[in-house]
Figure (tube, rainbow, N blue to C red):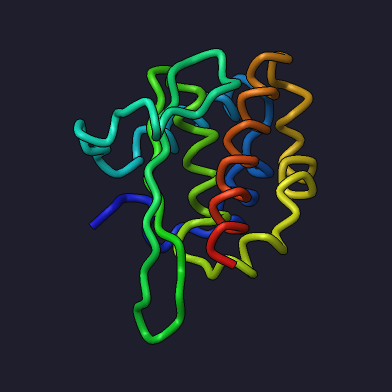
Amino acid sequence: MPALQGLTIDDITAGFDFLEDWEQRFSYLLDLGKKLPEFPEDARTEDNKVHGCQSQVWLHAKMRTDNNTPTIHFQAVSDAHIVNGLIAILMTLYNDKSPADMLAIDYQAVFNQLDLEQHLSPTRRNGLHAMVQRIRTLAEQHA
């Protein structure tokens, strides 16, 4: 069972709110990244690579039809620990949702609530936006 399963964005927000400073919050973000499910080696392909990130990021997605409701399940991984933490947040927000629900998510509001984006370097912010755009593109293709 993936370690992120059952974790909600409210849990993550509560974790961020509980911690007193950004050093602790970044440590928490790193811990979230360590909980990512194992990423299949054969999915580390050019087609699955997310371009626009400073670090290497791969995102693999597939459509599921559990309970007659089409959802998109994705896995992602990076060679940068901090980016794995961002991926964990994105997975909590987007994973296993219908394409319409995915497109309705205001990730910017979530990252503003976490007060996270202003603490990322410009290149990390660009990478975050590239990952979200990739997820939204997948949702649009399946909507």
